[in-house]
Image (cartoon, rainbow, N blue to C red; front, side):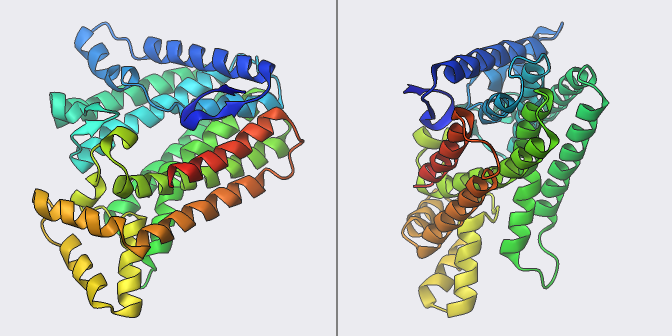
Length: 336
């Protein structure tokens, strides 16, 4: 049993382990190459988050999905670089929108160089991803373009908030399907598609990725409340401070509206106050960590992870499938 990739995923088959490790090494090299520029400052900014590390969750999924076809096909590593570059670009933009100070345990790009450089660096990464995509063929471009549209739509919907009469939790889960599920789904799709897997297999893995992506983000929501910076790589309660309504907060508000308990209403009022004040922010975190809403959010995470696992049922039994199943368990474990 060997640990590979994020969350301590264990791969029990030596051949699969070798393929995945070799693929991730090649992706890392590809990321560094893709973020080089003739302008040294651009290289420094573009490689800021690459060198800070990260789980490489999406490239790992590309590698595992490729096992259902030819895992040595030439498009697999470049497509994994594309999805990770796209993900990294969104992090630069997200940190500007959230005014985040820390990302992956280092100062965020907007903290270090300012918002304009951070936004433009994200754009630079999108451009480099597009260059690589152009060599992968029109179908890859189409798949990525549709996913990117969903990703941006999810971000816009989050910014706009739910329409009148729309359940906020349902709205939020739709947002996550776009913002996170879409790119995780593409990771699985690219791995299977580039390996030449059957279309039915490609579709199954795409559905799996969509559900796993939502579970992954829900686990992050829980971690934003429940963890410290050593676990999450960013400042705890960042979303809370910025007033971003993640699932634990939405579950709290839902409960307050349904039961009308004084302590729930008081906590909602605290969350609506100015949480730039460190004392209020710390108190809000303390109360949320002990609140049933956090446990409800954990249960929601488990439900999506179970749905992802169920989506894999049509696939043949193999070590790659076992690893994908284990990823579902690992996501749940992150949420506690």
